[in-house]
Length: 449
Ligand code: PMP
Image (cartoon, rainbow, N blue to C red; front, side, top):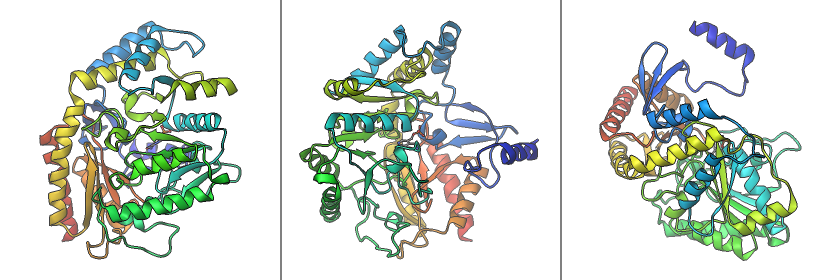
């Protein structure tokens, strides 16, 4: 049966969509932070379907609400009102600071960022958009122009992408991130990934200013940033860096967009939103993934002023956004996060996890860096700590595969796909972290032999 599935995949499914493992998993069932394959083997899910299953696979409360809503009404299209939408809008907006109070409901992260880009241009009446190198904001024709992670193929077919400017050097990150695909010179930054490395900050600010100067009329429509870069391998900015960048953008009339697709909904522990951890106030916030615990939904939240500028110039419409089912699920997710203290759990278990993996970094020379916040942790693999060169792909693949075979699923990221990304559902416990650390440790010992 397994070989038959592989054959169907080869014949009928997108060739771009390759399986994550050499021996792909055939997943059958999920329960909270655990996944089960069709042979009944269980796996601790430390990647949550790419940071999406926020409160746990098939969480009983979310499932019950979804089932109940499904029996009543799935879909109305956005031309009708239904109480779930208003209930949800009230709940979600209560979680955001003033003046971020107007919500647009859409279906995916890419769609949310597309819409944010349109809003930025409608409001500012300008064109240029800036994102950081290493950013990932989506794969739609528009957002592709904003995404730039070395391990992705980003040579765009002609006619695609937006008129965006990739800030050339900011922010490659201090370790393997400095080995950019398009940079033949391997500049090795001396600073480690300590968030308040001020020397690096000044340097990055200067580079950002240079980028701004390349924009048309030195003025920009908008600037996008993930509060912590996810796909790029959990890359954090120096302390205060984003705040200065926001000021520079606003001085030139642009709006600032926080992409909370990975960092929102309490994952970072100390705060509900990633931008709060950076002490910045965005004009537009985009969110997806964890918002629906796996149900496809997304949102853009902005000020009434920006929202109005969009309403003045075009009809924004989508058929599915904010369906009764999506809104009921979204509400249930918010309730579960609160009732089950999941943000607090992210903080407590995340801090514990970071410490545990940091201990492994001291034990193994091939762990270059362990970094992150809350339940968003990156483990960057290197050939050795001195050279900081990324561990060859083949070796990273083997470690990844071996961990999976021992029951631990992790994500991957970074320009060379050399960083393991650890982002479990927010219900994860300390004993499960111990299990994961033990699996990782024993795989590394085996690898060193
Ligand atoms: N923004 C960020 C930060 C993401 O990580 C992703 C997905 N990895 C997206 C946007 C795009 O979301 P989607 O895949 O739902 O379009």
